[in-house]
Length: 263
Image (cartoon, rainbow, N blue to C red; front, side, top):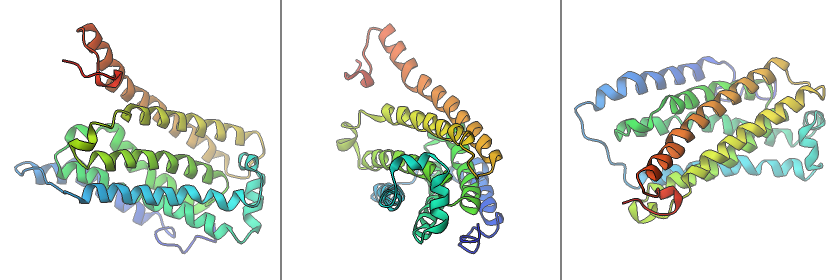
């Protein structure tokens, strides 16, 4: 898209690819080796500040939808008409700007794993986590480069809304045990994420049948990508919540997620 061709990091895919390669090198090799004989780092107030900053950024991305809602019916967001609308309106700059900031937020979020590594939270660095963080910057470089609005903007709104909730949880959790005891709703974040992927697939499939001008290969790639997350997040949910709940009940205890602490 000529409107974003000269924007930071968009002209060529090489900077984004280089960032992701450096990220993977740090997560897989450099970080673990560096921390092997060192104590876990304590980042103090930086952690809640970092997470709440991402809450603010994702909230900013979410509110971009108001630009469109002021001009047209909300129902049009599901049709090709929104793309025609955005191509001729001045507000497209602000929409594209929101998509770019969303793409850039995916690069910032790579710091999640870096912080996990430096804090020696190896249990949280799962395949799902690394797969998600390493692929999103590349996916959204493509989205920002070719379709910074219209079809891609629905995904921005969905994911940014979920991340407002998710990083709010992380920010509160980083404030320590006094706050953590009230955070009983973690598993519902995973459920919301799964709903998000189902909605993303539904929207993309619908776009295939309304003569949407976005490239069809992008539609199919997105469907496959979202489906991979449904599989991975479902697997995570089963092992993190269902399995624990079943084992606890088998042992005569009730889990924390059930509303009571086990003995």
